[in-house]
Image (cartoon, rainbow, N blue to C red; front, side, top):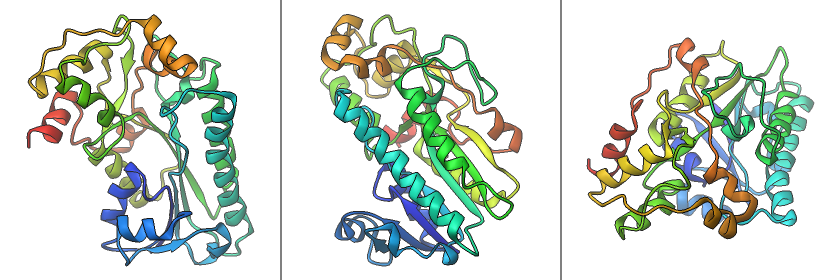
Length: 297
């Protein structure tokens, strides 16, 4: 099959394309074609604009692009960049799909568990009482745009992704150095929930959605056992054989990160009900096993 991927040089994209490239023809959108070839290999087709993509010749679109949400303080300018890096490219994809005479049969588009906003009780895909804040606004508009591609010819699957655990980058790349220096520990009271997923299961979910052509709609891409921030910190410290004594007060988080610190102070326990109902099997349903695989195997 011919598969078109945006965000292919990102954390999830790199891991996914390693699997897809063995059996399919992959085209990746990137402003830097050399980066695509250096990161993914010269066997990957690289395009720098959407105009170079013939959607009549594409079977599957996987949309993973977007400015990192937690790398910088949320200034007005940064919020706009975060939004437009997701909304614009998704709209361009939708327009390409809708204008094709023979459109892709599958469109898998990213989102995030930030859709739910801060929550104090477990939620699944049926939850509608989302907390009205920036992350919800961002993800809702992102999903609304992607769903415009839905038709009899094209199914749309949306992934509300949690914290992706990988040694190759992402959240752990920011946490692990502090823990190794014995500076890691819970944030605030540590009671906020963290919904996470091992990178192998993240890739597995996308492959599963590709294979199961009857599936469509929203899917929570999270492990079935979310944990509190206290538990996450303790498991990570145990895995790295380090103490877990330090704690970052909520006021310090707010001072350092501003509004973006809400992602750290508040959380949500997100359950992958639709994936379970569809028969998906998680290789790493428990955090301790996921961390051991990443750092001890």
